[in-house]
Figure 1 (cartoon, one colour):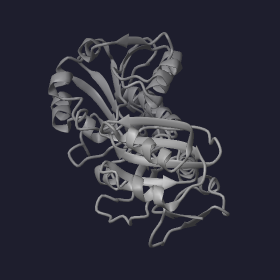
Figure 2 (cartoon, rainbow, N blue to C red):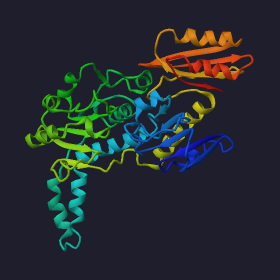
Figure 3 (cartoon, rainbow, N blue to C red):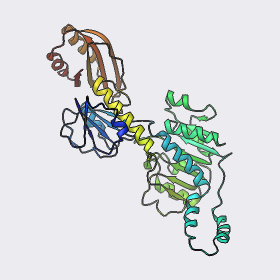
Figure 4 (cartoon, rainbow, N blue to C red):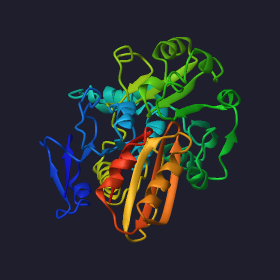
Length: 386
């Protein structure tokens, strides 16, 4: 029986993927084997030695201490793509709403309550909110992952000319992307072409301030910018200067900041991207399945700190070893299994930067001494025998 701690409200649809005969789910528990989390801050949390995995029901993991988890042999999962449709729909909705000045026009219309000349004032006042259609305009998409590719494909169907930039596009994302999207190998070449620009990359030290004074200077005058990925991807000081100069005509973002609020040309929504019951269900289901498969079978899918490793069970026992990515580890592991008179039926090893994971399916008589000997290898961080 595995104990799973939930640190936020997790969709019951997702929790149902954890069979009650194998998993005990609780909010308060002293020593969980796994944690399901959404936005709770774990950066300063002390983890008990028995904690095996943390699954984040969402994409961002900046609330989880990844380096410390790696050092302790704790696998961290996220759920890429589970909320992609929700975010993409919001982006496309705001693309249209921002172009037609819907937020400002709606606010103005609400202020006409009680106006005895309502119809006349509506016709007179609507002129100040004249917008433009998006058909025939050019959209630039920075990041062509699960969300960016959906936005690009949808924009094409709405009659836009779409350019995309993503030097790290995955094979799956490439398959899902329409061939009509113009692929740019250089961001600077794409920026001057775009009437609209939307960014869909993860927030990393290397992507912070992707939109800055230099990139904005390359854009068309009056470009409309959308940011529904992470607030830190756009340098707000440079953005506000670009709004003042007319380089940017509208900035639409899901990440309100004090300096943005009340500024003309800025449309802020309160982090609504994944705020749909469908997205919450999808994220919870994926997170629960990732956690279950790792705890029960040792398989790793969508980990952010360890390599993805999956293989069917081949019978017998399964040995799972989390270790540093150093030469000679595999030979030491196999030497110990051979010395224990175990036959290796299947073996897989993969690495991710300085971390690695080795799984062996073995047959033969297993003794408790093997785990102790494997754990004594200097580069080994954690050993599990299933």
